[in-house]
Image (tube, rainbow, N blue to C red; front, side, top):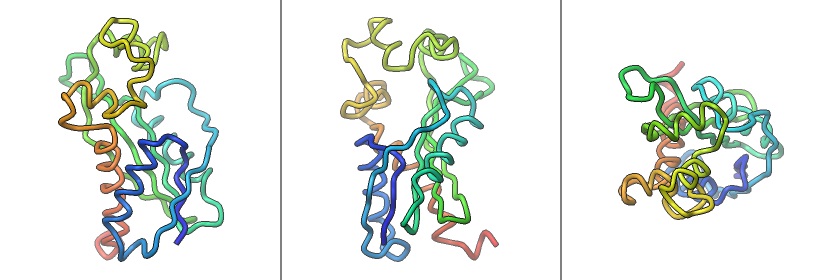
Length: 180
């Protein structure tokens, strides 16, 4: 069974591959293929709607000659009672050519200065962390653990966070009788 991932990001590919292995009844003999996808989203999504739209667009754009396609996107969403008013969340959209299945990851709050830089489009999260002197790394999001790994001292990695969003999206595929 061919499954496409709308990204060339190695963290997203590994998370999707690992998640699919947990569901042999849904994905017998999976063949995973990553596909470069151009998305309309420029910069860091700043709303849950934009984050989900980016994941859906990635899933739909990568759906060709396959049974399922996965779109994975990270972005911010407004969350009341937080210090900044926002939290970062990962979204997964799984597309079967007809239906979209959505899942979200655990969410976390960026440091205030990072949130401000993202909201003003001054920098993405990796750039903000570097410019603010929190790290000297060029691209935290692409390194082992990602920024969430950095913030949690590797207690939760970006790959695991992404995998959680995929598992949440798979609930409706695994238990379709509950979602008729």
